[in-house]
Length: 347
Image (cartoon, rainbow, N blue to C red; front, side, top):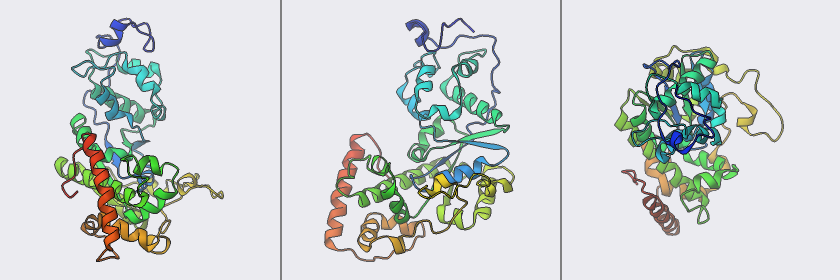
């Protein structure tokens, strides 16, 4: 490979030019990685599903990259043609979540040593190939909840990648979101949290789920599968068998035993930190949620709830509830449109 002083301190010309041909070893050009993306509104059980799938002997699933579409969109470190330049490497290494994939500067430089300049999507595929190989596995994927709203963009970069979209009852999701330290930053990212956190969470759920389902229709059933959180915890073997069939992988009992040797029953820990096995009833809106919150969620997202097969409690809503939902939805919608985001069909 052409001499580059350092990926972290190249001169301006070297930073902006694509990596030149060299004699390094390239990854398999026929890579199928990243193999899948686990997506869904936050607090929907994406971590549970990621841990289950990561326990499969052929599949490694990294926990939340976030940088994949972002770095491509930012274009820093890429030529106009989408070729990787040395400037990308320090950007990746500085990304807060990048360390989870366990790559060093030397690793990244090695992945750029090939017989021709490498495109961003091929470079990322090589990263996932190496991640899988280091885990002694063939396939590698990612779990990032927010990618549920970026399925189309991700599909355009890696058209063979599969998507598993996990969906949870928004009333239970809301209970979890309101107690989560990042709830406001997540469900409140569209500018309405201070107006009403419950309605904001329902809108966040509706927007995320609808966007994911619409994109799923576009990429097709061979690449997109929906999983209900409630089914995943009540019948984990059955659901995992179906997901493995979708992924073209043999079922592995290790997936339902993902928690063995890791469970911690210490007081004060969250269910995620405890590494609990699939557990029914961690949240139950029927007994834990005030009726006024249930009404606001159903007034906000009741149509989608029913479309997904969830039973609703309210057939009619108080005028004040309808008015409040309309007010918050309008603000949420203005925020989406100001950011150039498309509205789902059922919005």
